[in-house]
Amino acid sequence: MKEFLKTTASALNIAEWQVENSVQLMKEGATIPFIARYRKEKTGELTDIELFEIQKLYEKYLALEDRKKAIIKSLYEQEILNNELQNKILSAITMAEVEDIYLPYKPKRKTRAVKARERGLEPLAKMIMSENVNNLEYSTVKFLSKDVKTIDEALAGARDIIAEWVSEYGWVRNRIRQQFEKYASITSKVAKDKEEEGIKYSSWFDWSENAMKAPSHRVLAFFRGENEGVLKIKISPDKERAVDMICSRVIKKDNECSYQKELAVADSVGRLIFPSLETEIRNIIKERADESSIKLFGENLQQLLLAPPLYNKNILAIDPGFRTGCKIVCLDHNGKLLHNDTIYPHPPQNQTAMAVKKINNLVDSYNIDAIAIGNGTAGRETERLIQMMSFKKEVLAISVNEDGASVYSASAAAREEFPEYDITVRGAVSIGRRLIDPLAELVKIDPKSIGVGQYQHDVNQKLLKERLKSTVELCVNKVGVDLNTASKELLTYISGLGPKLAQQIVEFRNDNGDFLNRTQLIKIPGLGKKAMEQAAGFLRIKNGDNILDSTSVHPESYHVVEKIASSKGLNVEDIIGDSKIREKISPKDFTDKDTGEITIRDILRELEKPEGIQERNSVSLSSMRISAVSVTLNQE
Image (cartoon, rainbow, N blue to C red):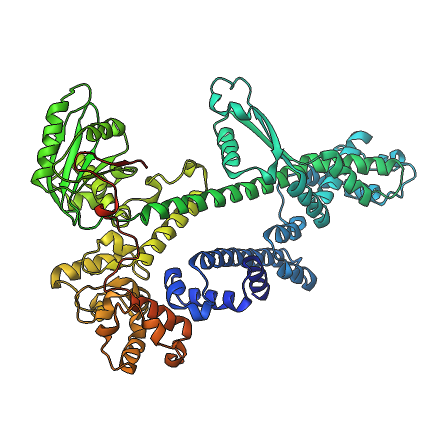
């Protein structure tokens, strides 16, 4: 554990105590959003990104420790474990190092070396390795048998054994691994007769570059082309250089044995070492490409989720189409479905005049403030139609990314919410609600379906799912949710909850009415003290019993706020929204054994905000240049 703390602290450029405290909090069941927001003293104000890195490195450390235990158990069962070997394994700091140590003792399949040993050629291999044989041909004759009929056959078997020995030397694997990491080229060639089929990969029909420096998108394209049978990918450093490096260490003389050793080394490099380390380096560059791409996907998803909501506006949403028409829905400012219809302004019907008339009537009838237009099929044509129209009032029109709308419309959540409507209506509702509140709507959809990157299907799907899920969690908890209006899907991502507790909260709310305070959460079946601690600060209640329940101040710190207000002779309500409060208060005057200055400063910043303020910038019509006769379209 000490080595983990040291290497992790060095990698992230933070102190060891920060790593240790963060890991301890995670082991105690604290979520990253909770740690990042409410345990800043313990972590030294580490960000959620740094905490995720610590979590990822800790999981790798645990996997390494588990592998060490498995190897030690295997060696013990083989009755070859000793203190020196055990200590060597325990002190290893990378998975590659552990596997290199274990390799000579790893149970082997029927290799060429194993077969040569079974034919009694290991003593000959040892003689050759010693280079102390004056007449190799004469010495080899004694190893001939019914299974080994010629001298050449005997020498070949001995070389197979030597080749395996060389491939298992830790220093050999380490040095050639370094050559792979520094000098290996990744070479891409077109497979035979695949030129026409793989035309989209034509840029890489004859390509070579340093493997470790290849950009992630190209690495993913290489492997995708290989998986499709279009490209042949090879990763290797210079073979002659590797052979010379090993020979300079293992060959001491210049005789017949030396020549046999050189042949065995060349065979070992080409047949055993290079293929093994190529697999290893492939995994490394693929993992790096995955991590780089997944990081980008996470950032793209975060931008979508935290896009400014369009509060308090009635929406007309259009899911465009050609043959089947454009589905229209009208939503009130809370996203409630008021009306649905279909227009056919595009080919083959071309009922443009009727479509324009219907849109104008709906805008007037439902007092529409903004039009959301899906950016899929017929999206641009529908945008042009809206651009040509004029309205009696100012109307904002925005092209909305509709990726995943069809996935939502066919989901159980959509069927539960709109059982009487078909998928086309549900899809249009999803498009409109994305304009009202992107976060609340997009959490209903599998993050992979939202369209956050070009290479989603090429990366490690488990890591992608974990990263996108954690991104959604961070976004939801960054903003916080209204406990009395949040959907089950939104509540699922709140720190400490999950699907089951989210469902319990919704059912409790339906049966008992709105929550009046956060303490009522303890009445939820299955929601214990730990879940309460993790979730409470991210669940907001407007117009409840306690004004602090509408803020991100955690209930564990309410006594601090009360103390601050009391020190000024005021009530808590009097200091909410006080923009000068930080100037009036010295944080150190209110610290105690559980609450440090960092937390006090966070509380003071929160108290400056008006009650119920959202942590995203809302979009207002007045902030945009729009005209009653001209509709603005903001392209994605």
